[in-house]
Length: 101
Image (tube, rainbow, N blue to C red; front, side):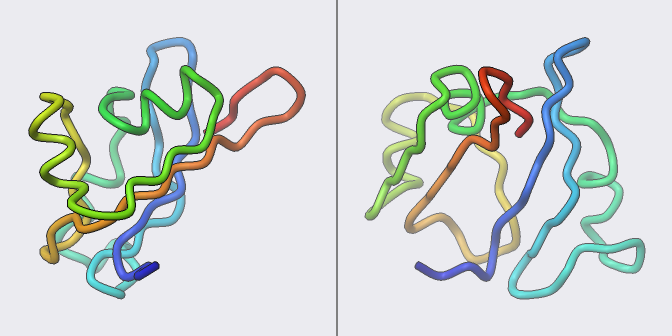
């Protein structure tokens, strides 16, 4: 699986949002000097496939045509980088019963 575009996010139950602690966009680390930094440095609502993984506490793999899957199911998604979405993998990070991200 290509990992040129991915993120690691933590959940905040107080406002059902995510903060992004590691983001790669087109194989470049998104930091303060990256043009996408203003978006990734702010809390974002939990939505789309990330929401599904967090709420269901189960991994999800879409191996082919992930963008088509999202569009067909009318799911919002967080796009990372400019390469489009061919496959998608989400895995909940949890301790006991609590999902952290």
